Length: 493
Image (cartoon, rainbow, N blue to C red):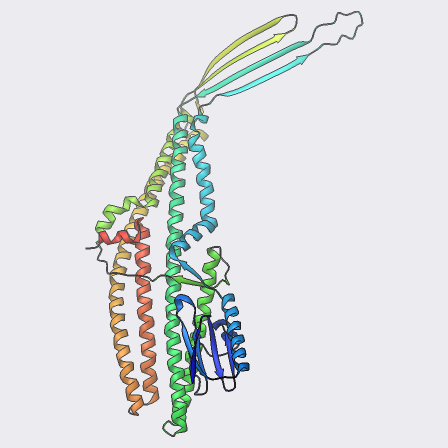
């Protein structure tokens, strides 16, 4: 008579001869036990018992004593507790964006600079606000001669207002506005770079994890083959060298999987730290790098999007700023300046005496008109900086054109690599199936069979890498054009 129990915990169970062992997959790894679901020999059975959406597992056993029932219940309870300890967080790309923006120190510094320039741009009136000062005092003369007449204290008060008017004020105000616009561009550019880098790292980690799946599959194939060869060797169907080769192949597959697992954990931990999370937190990245063929015309992209790049816009603003500085330098060093002043004062002694004063002054520099003087050199230096900015703009535009052309050419070539890698993967899959059949029939030696298996693993990883490279190129091109990735579709033929 057999009975069935529906297990609703998340744990691995191993039934050894005479007993059970249960725990989470992480506990199994720490104990040095084989991964869940791996068949090590005919006397060992273990499976993964999962919870909720992960599925359910039904274990069937024969009639047991009450003591064994109680023992098995404790085993399931231990597995449940260990499973709760190893809960996994699901992280989407959108959540990664939010965390990256929240915890990026560079972006926070850009936000502070932006706020400073915003306050300055909103307070342009302060540039023309006059300077106002107020002074007050009291004095009292103490006679040294006792017969001298004592005077009353003298109270004084003065208010002064001074306003400097010159043609540099509009230039200064214009440059403050340009500084705010550039800060806004710098912030948006830093944010887009952060989002682009987060996307590339996110998809790279997904690809690494998928590569782990391929390597784990190759490891299981090697271990399964080793077990079959062990049984066949006992029956005399496999020689000693073929069995030793199978052992070496299995150990190499384990090593490749372990190394890839370590690399993935390190890369994931670094990514989590950048997001402000604990590097040791159990996280599963949810998503897949979807790709589609894009046929892009670089000339059309350059025509429509070159002037929309933040660096090009910022350089135009910089040219305007330096042009303003050149004009301001000329006016400051060679142009006239006008100062207006007004004051009111009062004194109180025997009576109230007050007065009002006003003044106008005009200054005209003379020395700066003399060649090689300090003022003349300042004017020439500002003009040289303006000319350099014009040349830098041309250089930036040429580099931007080359960058866009390079990305579009690389995208086209990489798509061809994707198609080839997919064909190669299908071919390697079919070749491995035929090689496995031939090896089992005894018409192929182990080395040739192992070669077919390795080619399959290499082809799968090459397909994965080529698809990842294509995705990264598309992300980089979208960033270079200052658009979202999905907007590239409308530029595709």
